[in-house]
Structures are given as C-alpha cells and as structure tokens.
Image 1 (cartoon, one colour):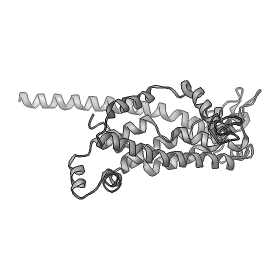
Image 2 (cartoon, one colour; image 1 turned 180 degrees about the horizontal axis):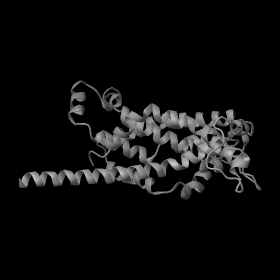
Image 3 (cartoon, one colour; image 1 turned 90 degrees about the horizontal axis):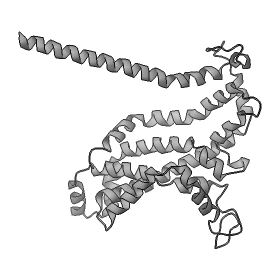
Image 4 (cartoon, helix red, strand yellow; image 1 turned 135 degrees about the vertical axis):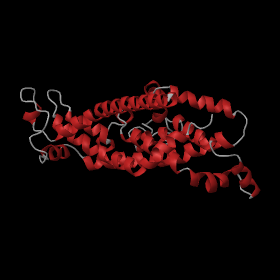
Length: 299
C-alpha cells in the first residue's frame, strides 16, 4: 500500500515537472516567434498602417505585395544576392575542408606541441571580431601583388573591396576546429588501427574512413558558418566601399533614411534576404542536433 502511494506521488511529481517544462517551452517559443511575426505582419502593411497615429498590429490584407515590389526596385538586389551567395558558398566549402582537416589532425594524430597549439587556437574563440579588425584591415591592404600593390605590399589597396577580403579571413575558425576535434575524438581508436593494417596513411584514413562518417558535423558547420557569413554586416561594411561589392546586409541599409524609414519596405526586404538561410536550415536540420550533441562525448 505504501509502495503504491509512493509510486503515485512520484508519478504526480513527474507530471507537474513535465507540465512546468511545457509551459516554459511554450512561453519561450512565443517570445522567439514574436519578432518574426512582427517582421511578417509589417511587410504586408501600408505606410498608413505603420504610422504612430494609425498603427495596426495586423495588416488589412496579406495579399498586399506592394512593399516587396518597392523594396526590390530600391537597389541592385540581384547583384547583392550574387555577392552574398558567392562569398557564403566559398567560405562554407573552404571552412568544411580546413576545419575538418585541422580537427582530424588534433584529434587523431600525434605531433609535438599539439596541445599547446590547440590551446592557442581556442584563444581565437575568446577574441571579438571588432578587436582585431584594424590589424586585419592593414594586412589585407598590404597584401602583395594585389590591388595595385608591389611585392612589398605598397602602392595600392591590396585585397580591400574585393571578394578576397570577405573570404580569406573566414576560411578557418577556432570554433569549427573545436567542433571537428570533439567530433573525431568520439570515434574508437580501433578505426585507426584497422586503417593502418590495411595500409592507409593519415590522409587516406581521413578521406575513406572519417570523412564519409562526418555528415552530422559537416552539416552543423554548414549551417553555423553559412548563417554567420550570410548575415555578416560588420566586415563588408569595413572592408568594402563600392556598390559592386555590396552584400544583402549592406543593401538593407538603403531603407534607413536621414528623415524617415520605410519599415514595411525594410521588413519585406528582410524576409526576402532570409529565404536562402531558411532553405539551408531545412535541408540540413536532421543532422544539426546530432552534430551538436556528438561534439561533447569526449574531452
């Protein structure tokens, strides 16, 4: 009898905790969705409906696409999308190669100074991009034999205002190396021994054994790096100056005027620019959680 009451009490406690968890998750979901819904509703509103005097939470019609048409006419969006897409694809592909190779080396190979070098790489996770933008700017401007520079990196603009300035600094990253290293540490050592018995060196072991089993971590890196590169505003603002090098994030700034801002046009353009990243996430979402969870299995 006592065991029955104890069992019922534990079950009641579990139900209460489950109910509290569901309520917290629902509140968190609503808080997360509110800004997205605000962007969506505002993009369908007219100028009158977003004014302070006649403000409405919901648009009068969800079939009003005037804001989207006006936003598209405001700038060279095909050029902005081309720049952002090219930069994002090259950065993501380069990052997958470099980060996975470096993570594999730190996780499976033994060489002198490995732990010290890895600790130095982790320092990069603690440094904000804004604190190193000046030395990066100087290095890119002084790049030899680029942008009119001589062999000593003088006389021109180097890689500034070019694709190189927005690609080269981001081909590798501390966080990506860390994720790959943690992921490859979870593999049993027997794989390396079996590969050596079959005559595979480190490169073949990586290519034929570890890389085919890296879908989860590579998909995770693709999403994280792709979103970060596509949404980057700071570096394109500092490292580029011409209209031809504008990305979609710089293009959004044209809606912010000195006297007034067309928020409905801005929200419509924001929705348009977010479509590629939404597609990317839905294509790789089934691997995303698995990749994040698998990186913490071993130290």
